[in-house]
Length: 281
Image 1 (tube, one colour):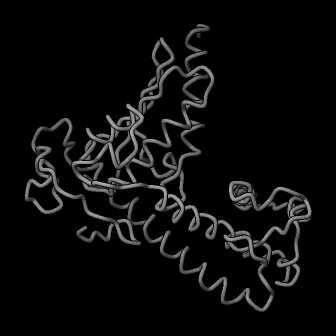
Image 2 (cartoon, rainbow, N blue to C red; image 1 turned 60 degrees about the vertical axis):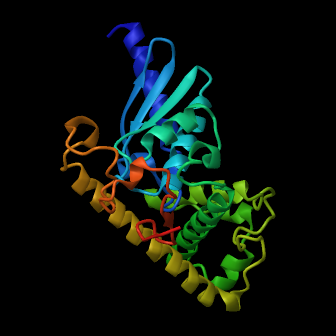
């Protein structure tokens, strides 16, 4: 195998590794694990094309935009990448999302004819909280599973937490993800900082642990249900005709209602707590 081909494979592998850090904002699962990425191409000028497809033609535009923008940012962080070009396909507003991300526009400007006045900051914060709580619940339950009692968990600092070795590969992976999101919240800066606090940074008291975990369980169940739904929809969709290639369905019919609204300047559906529960804006 020639050196140029080896170099190309190395670069493609680095791109996939970056994409594995990008999550579906509601599910807190990697877009690569969910099967959203169809293929990655690195050209001779170190431009990177990323083609992805979501579970349905009418998946939430704000989620789609977030993922496309996060892909662009993640891959652009590689020092050799000259341009990262995510391309959403087979989606009711793929053209607007692709152009907006390519031109560096905010969501509200990129989709002003479809979702006017929209900022995604609040949405990012909402799903960052859900990701934090899901990862935290996983680690608390893992600690309980190896014999730690609630008072010990509540007073555990990061030094002690980091010293714990988990044999299970998935627990070790989730431990690293929890530490990452703690750092993102500036909640885990020092070894003596508490390992388990609320999203706002408040200590969790032992007598609060049971109701606290009950609430986190609800967050997890919601996310797991939506994950299973997404995977099922994507699996079913992959057996359907490809809108981009088959030519049997036009962009003017989004399939959500059959009214041809995707070709008009109308407000997009606003997603409620569940990704596929769609309510009119």
